[in-house]
Length: 383
Image (cartoon, rainbow, N blue to C red; front, side, top):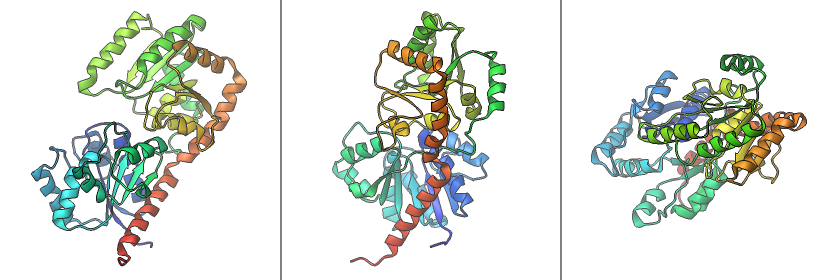
């Protein structure tokens, strides 16, 4: 099957995390494979703006509430005007809009759902069983999320597969010139710089990062720290709380908060070590990006993030996995990596091969293969 497919990538979310970045990478990747791709998104959202910048014209897809009549009607209109071969959703909440529209319109094509966030509640009531029955393939961004889906969602485990979030290894790579530019811009040439890239929201481990910085500075007073990440308007309180903690710990000069960083690969290139301290990260895209940039990483075991370093085995070769909230232990491990040039060199050597497991090109190919398999199965006569 080499025919061109008409594929919809849809998410009504207004956020700016992995849930939105995945379709933002998948849509152009599929278009490079000569597929016809439409993006359903809120035009005013992060995803809507970014897809427009990439040459798409996002079709309005807004969340107005669960089983909202006008939203269902708009999806039906979109199906009539430009019927796709396959629809790929990236937010389980959108099932309540799309599934009723498909039923009312009589659209029988494959429906794919990606899960980027773990569920903390069971979804096995009659309504959820009806919604998930319509899903032909559910893609989890890590094995951790796959296990969570099977435990909490009413779907045949045979329909659930792991599709690790991707990293564009063409964009994210070791760049000595970018490193020099960043270090000069920061005014931190010759100093040790530890950084973290994560959305400013509870649960990512920013408080621990600040406490670790205070401990490490007691031993290595020349160390510097940088945090990159944005916060949503309704979580400004958390940003303010972090800045207050920074003041209480006396870290105003040593820890810099950069906010949203557009050129993440340059930011990562300027760091000596990248840390990620979330307790239950679904995957940890910024960690895979750091590895692609040749950076040693230290991560917290929790959720799916350790899977990046450990793969199918049980040993991390491109970094270290910790399972503790003790800032003293984190500081000791960081100091060991910073002191040992052979250890840091080994991590840098292994980082790029580790990141290549999540390369964007092979990830897009895998999705396209799954899409074709689903369409072929739909064409097979029943029985």
